[in-house]
Length: 141
Image 1 (cartoon, rainbow, N blue to C red):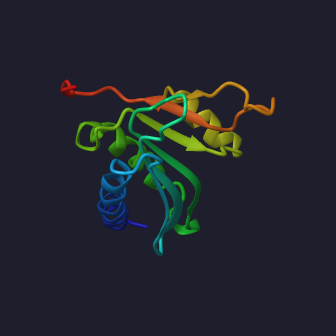
Image 2: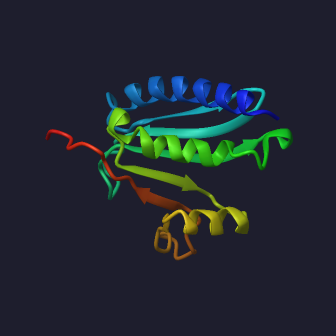
């Protein structure tokens, strides 16, 4: 898989995510949708989730399935990096990765300064990681 394919997939996903994020910021509960392409599938939530403990704009990725031919070529890490780099454009405050069951992914997230949420309300260990993004400019408010 070449870098052109990765670049094309990133552009496609972020075009879709910008639409989702705009819709999520207009609804009190945010929005959730599946992104599906020939390269990947990813359940994504975006917006401000009123009633949650963290009421700022969040993008949450879950059930991420990257096609075998694209694995190991930097697609997932590029998505995370782009979310961090474009946090100001998204007015994004937090990135969440939900249901992390792969130990390699958990280790990668920890190395990238993600934190894991404390235990779930049912007492089970959390499998959701989060990163509060740093903004390059001050957001008025």
